[in-house]
Image (cartoon, rainbow, N blue to C red; front, side):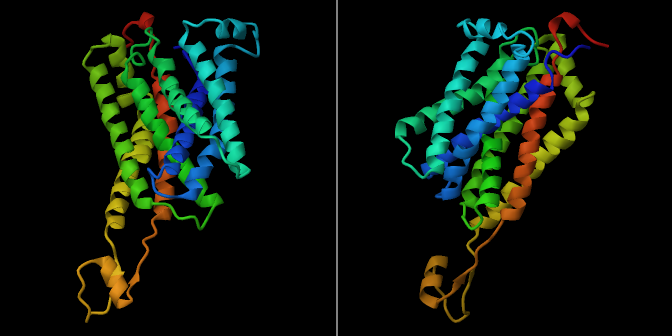
Length: 319
C-alpha cells in the first residue's frame, strides 16, 4: 500500500511538539508552576525556536513540494480556508517570537512580557496544530478524531518537559530542580496519554469510524506496527516512565532526616532546626534522566505509528 505521508512528516510532527513543549516548560518554570529552577526557565527558550524551525522546513518542503514545485508554496500561503495555511502562519510567528525570546534570554536581557505570553500562546497553538493537521483529514478514519490534537498536545508537553530537563541537567549541572513537582506533573501527563490512547483505540475498535478505522487500530495493536507500539511507545515511553515517576515522587515526598535518638520533635523541619540534624537530599536525577529519554522516544514512536497506520477510505477492508 502506498504511504499517505512519510518519515519527514513524522519528524516534523515530533519536532513541532517537542519545541512547543520546551517553550511552555520554560514559561511554566518562569511562573513557578514547576518549581523555581533557573535552568528550566532558560533552556526551553533556547531550543524551542531552532527545533520548530527545522521541523517546519521539513513540513513545507514535503507537503508543499517546495524543492520540486516552489510555486505551490504561494498557493499554500494564499488559502485562508486551509488548516495547513493557518499552521504555516502560526509556525512562522512562533519561530520568530521564540527566537527573539531565546536570544534575549541568552544575552540575559529583560524579555518583554508581551513576547513571553505571545510565545506561550503560539507554542500551544503549534502543539495543537500538529494534531489538527492529521485530525482534519476525513479520508483517513484513524486520524479523523478530535482526540488526536488533544493527544498530540499532551505528548508535546511531556516530551518538551523531558528534553528541557535533560539539557538543563547536562548543560547547567549544579542547578537544582524541583524533582518532586516535575515527577507529579509527568505522572499527570503520561497518565493522560494512556487514557487518551485507550479512548482512541476503544473508539476505533467500536466501529464508529468504520471498518477502515478498525483495520488501522489492528495494524497498531497486532499487526505490522505492533512491535514499536508495544515495546517503544507503551513500554519505554509510557509504562516504565510512569512507574519510575511514581516511585520517585513517593520517595521524594518522604522527608528523610538524621537526628540523635535523645531528641523527639514533632516535625522533620523542627528536628533539623532544634537538634542540628542533617537533612539528607534525595537525588533522583539519573533515574529521571533515563525515563525522560524514554518519554522522548515514546513521543517520536507515537507520531510514527499514527502516521503509518493511515488507511484511506477508498482502500476498503484489507485482508
